[in-house]
Length: 113
Length: 110
Image (tube, rainbow over all chains, first blue to last red; front, side, top):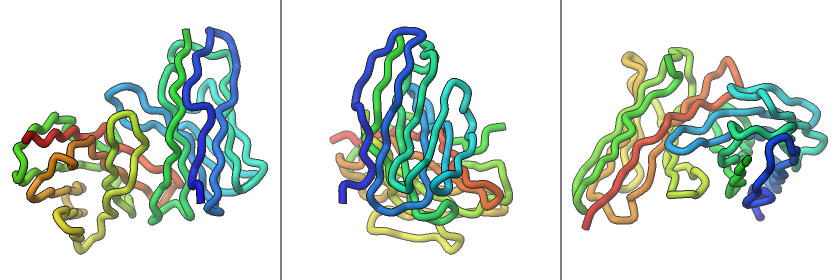
C-alpha cells in the first residue's frame, strides 16, 4: 500500500494564479482531511470529508475549495492565490474520526510570490 | 482560548535524560487524545494514543488527566533519535475535527 500520496511536492505560484493539490489514499479510509502548517505553528484544518460526496469546513477554509467524488481522492483547490497561502499543506486520512490514527501524506510546499 | 496548548520549548536534554511534556485542552467533551511526532520538514506520524488509564510503550508513557484537562508524555532514557517536535492532538466527539497543538521541540544532545 502506498498510503497517502500528495502531488506536487513543491510549487511556486504567482499572486492570483490557481492550482489544485492532489491527495489520494489507498487504505479505503472514509475520513480525509486537509491541513496547512505555517512555520513554527501547529496544523490548522482547512476542510475535511467523512465520505464520498460529503465535505465540511474546518478552521481556515477561506480561499480554498474541495471535492470528494471518490473514496480515494480529495483534491484541494486554491483560487486566486495570495501570499498568505504560502505554507506546507498536508493531506491525511483515517478510518473513522474519533479514536483512529490519522495517516499523513508527505506534504506539498507552496510558495505564493 | 486555543483548543490545545503546548509549551513550545525548546527542550535540550542530554542522552539518557528523562523529559516530560504537557499539553492542555479546552473542551471538556474531548474524547480522544494522541501524541504525534514530526521530524523536520516531514509529515506527522502517530507516536501514541492516550487512554484514560494511561499507557506505556517502551520508553514512552502517556497520561491523561480529565479533571485538569491535560495530557502528558514522558520519555525515559532519551536517545539522539528522539530529537523531533512532539504534537499534542485532541479530537472531540461533537465534531469530526482534530485540533493540533503547536508542538514541543526536543533536541537530545550527545
